[in-house]
Each structure stands twice: as C-alpha cells, then as structure tokens.
Image (cartoon, rainbow, N blue to C red):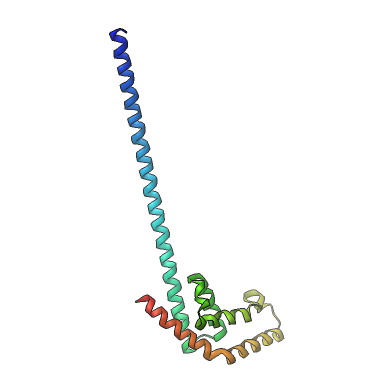
Length: 159
C-alpha cells in the first residue's frame, strides 16, 4: 500500500472517531437533559401530592372541629369526612372509631344532592330531612367521639 492510501485511511479513521465522539457527546447531553426534566417533573408531582395531602389533613381537622362544636350537622360532616378519608387513606375506615363515617355515608347514599335535591318536592324533602334528623339523633354522640379521635390523631400527625 502506498503512503498516500495509508494517510487517507488514517484521516478517514480520525474523521470517523471525531464524528462518533460528537455523536456520543450529543446523545449524552440529550440523556442528561431528559433525566433532569424527569427529575423536575417528579419533584413537581411530589410537591402537588404533598400540597393535596396537607389540604386534606387541614380540611379533616377543620371538619372534625366543626363537628365537635356543632357548627356542621352530623350527617353532612360525616359524609364530608368519609370522602376526605377516602382521599387520604381508605384504610382509616377499617379503624373501628372511624367506621361511623362510612356507615352514615352508606345510610344516606340514596338521598339526592345538589340539583337533584333542589328539584325534589317539599314532601319528599321533609321525608329525607326527617330521616337525616333520626340518624343525627341516634348517632350524634358516636360521630362526635369519632371526630374527637380523628382530631387527636391529626394533631399527632401534624406535629
């Protein structure tokens, strides 16, 4: 082989090496950029999740205090707490002291809400209101006790 062919092959090889180095560097930069974007996305998701968790805890605390002080009705408070507990940790319902919230939710699940409630005639509304008043009379002490236990547990969790 002549000297010019060998020099051409070396130059071509050097060109290929430089090309591959540039290609590898660009891929490395792209992977690094994607990894950072994924990390930022994960941090945003965790931040939103933490904010939601804190919001649910705060809402549960406010509702449990409102139930204990009589600022909200037993049925309405129980339903709201049950729904918030579903978002926080559905396993809470298995605790005996919090089961009352699920029980009241299940007992009143058939009662229309929002627009459906507004469209009911007065007689039907009174029937449902009497049903809810009966539940409140029978289960008020149990619900207030459960709200107190929940409030205590939330205070421990927040501190």
